[in-house]
View: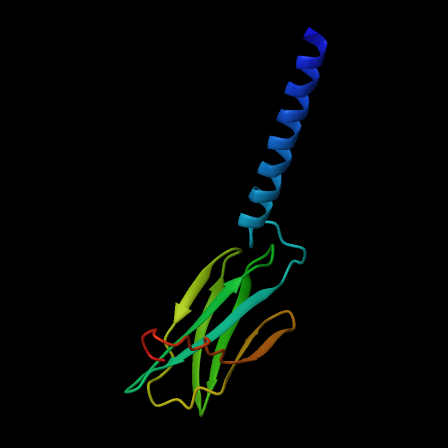
Length: 129
């Protein structure tokens, strides 16, 4: 009878450890990297009735520092960020007169990512809908 309790306790501990491992891995984006040089770019714009809110998130998700990081907002607007350490994230505001079509981020070691701005879905009854 005592050995069956030990069995259930060991199974319970294994399940808890497994769940903890999955949660830790999912929360560690940027910490466990699969490549030496990798970047995540998320351009976002939210058109309201009277104005447009926009931001660009750039994060080094690689294992090594990214050098010569340059953000090209389009329309001749370029921003040099220099070096991003592994896991480092910056949130940028594009120039107010920018057309907000797409963003291109480049860096040394062949990094080049071009993404269009994403727009959140409008939900009836919410602000800006």
